[in-house]
Every structure is written in structure tokens, then in C-alpha cells.
Amino acid sequence: MTQLCREKIKPVLANFTTLKSGEVHPGLLLTKGMVDFPEGSKVGEIKAGRIREVCEISPSDIYQAAFARWQTTTQNFAHTEAALLGRLYIGVARDNALETGVTVSHTYGMPMIPGSAVKGLCRACAGDWLKNEEACRYLFGNAPDETDEAQLEVGGLIFHDAWWIPEDGKKPFVPEVVTVHHQAYYGNEGKQPATDFDSPVPAPQIAVQGSFYFVIEGEPAWTKLALRLLSQGLEQRGIGAKTSSGYGYFA
Image 1 (cartoon, rainbow, N blue to C red):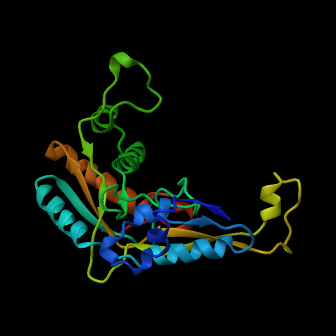
Image 2: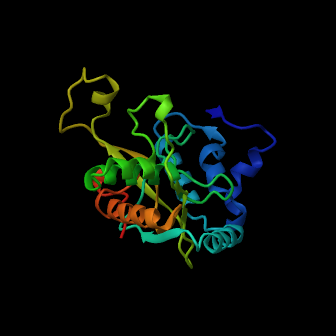
Image 3: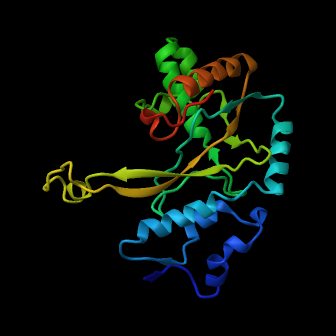
């Protein structure tokens, strides 16, 4: 058993479930919330229990007020709301004791989709449907493979982080699981063959449900085009991880 925190804060982290939902920061609990790192066969069970506890957290009053303020502030920008058809994996590869994670707001701990991911999705869609190189350069700046510093451009639009939309009684996080069926095969770099007799090993994960509020700032004619690319991308390509398995698609 390896202790992961200082003695002074150990009682707080060990008993965080006794706090009111609005007083808990999910992001901190996901990265710092485990008091001890267990060893042995119960590791997955303990991690799954911590994830279930995090998934019981509701958005705080402070976050709801901040979201309302953000909506009011951005009414003159191009914006849209989109609802997940299923669940979203975003920022899964996080360095923490749970060995899984999710991208959250640094301040409020609620799920968010980084503006860089939104811009990347729109750029990918533009590569499929928008065959005007000058328009793509204005929307997104240089292509990733362009290295001429004399001609570097950053793009004429600002793709803001997408905020999770608080709804009555709706919790943002939901437990998920990935089952590794051939642990010995993967752990030994393929030296041990995978067979149908291997026992599945469930790995606990955390995903996001609900809806998001997207904002793109810039010249109205260009933001209107970017919103079309975004809408098509969210519906047809999805965003985040495991889109090939149906995650990250929006209506």
C-alpha cells in the first residue's frame, strides 16, 4: 500500500463523500483524491468505487452562475448547443492514480471540450468539404505541415472552450468500463498468444453525458461557416476518443 498524500489532508480526502456536492471539485478528486494506492487484485474495484463517487457530484451553484454569465457574455458571438447522443471520452490519458481521466475546467471542475479540439474538428471537416485553400487558411491558419515562419498565420477566428450545460437533476459524469480480454498478450508484447480462454479484466473509466455550449468568435460571415463545419463534424465525425466505437457524437 503506497500513501499518495500528506497526513494533514488525508482525513479530508478520505471522507470527501460527506461534503455537500457543491463543495467538491471533481477535477481535484480525479487527480489527487486517492489517499492510498492499493496493490493486488482489488485495485480495479477500488478505482471503480472512487469513480462512482465522483459521478455522484452535481454542478455547484457557482458553476451554474458562471455558465449563465458566459452565455450572456457570448450572445453576440456565433454559438450553438449540442446534445450528446451517447457519452463522451475527452482527455482520457491523464496522469493520476486512477489511470484514467477527463478534461474539466480548471476553476469549476466541470467537463469541457478544449477550443483546440473544436478547432481541430472543424479543420478536419474543412479538409473534406471545403476545397478553398484561402478560406481554410483564414479560418484555421497554416496547415500543420507548413513550417515557413515568414508565412505563418494563426487564423481569423477564436474557437472557445465548450462548456457543459447544467440541467436540473443532471449529473455530468458517468462510470464506464473497458474490458481487456488478453492481458497476458498485451503485457508480454505479444510473446504469449491470445486465446478464447483468457479471462476478461475490466478497467474502470469515466465518461461525460449531457450537452455542451459551443462559441466561435470572429467575423459573422466566417463564424457562420465555421458553425456549419462544427455541426457537421459533431454529427458525422464525433469528437474526443473512441469515436470509432460510437462515443463523442452529438445531435
